[in-house]
Length: 255
Image (cartoon, rainbow, N blue to C red):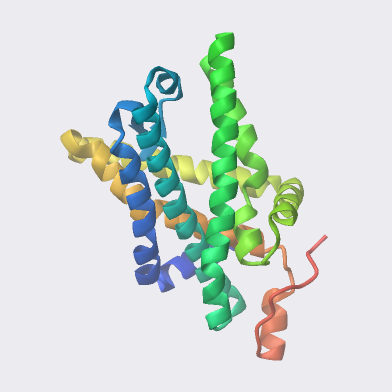
């Protein structure tokens, strides 16, 4: 049911989501500009943490600016996609007040994302000094970002403060862990499939094609699916809306 809602929302708002998804593409392309310290994999752009300590101050400045711009653009995309889902499921009008909150919510998610990046950077450097195995670094990265999985929907849809949004995210993960697993599996399958198909069709440009497809289509859909997973906790949302004929933003979560 949740997946069906996500598909309907995505198909109905494809044009709008395509515009918003440009921010994801620009954010990733900015990181590619520091190509000596980044690498692409399954349509994403990742920093080479091990190479950062070896660069000078100019390199730090360039990477820092790229990370800031990229993170802000991606944060804006997250807010815009979640606002689209909120409008679709709750049937709200995009008033000037709601639109005015886009900048504030983008800044909040940007600061949270930046903080998590710094934590991840510190962990990666520590593991490098300890000569820890590479799989451990990947596992710790997942553990760092997992608690904030639903922070975007909590901030945009429920208009929560950052601390409350993190608590709500953790609570939702504990209540419905299978939803997170399904989301992760779907995302991995879609990205791997895009990489494989791109490599088979256009091997010389498969990384660029994969990046374009993931940024413009897969990432927005996954965010739509994630937001629907979150908003589905309001079990009486749909029925109450039908009975009253007006938008219902909050309801008692299902036990």
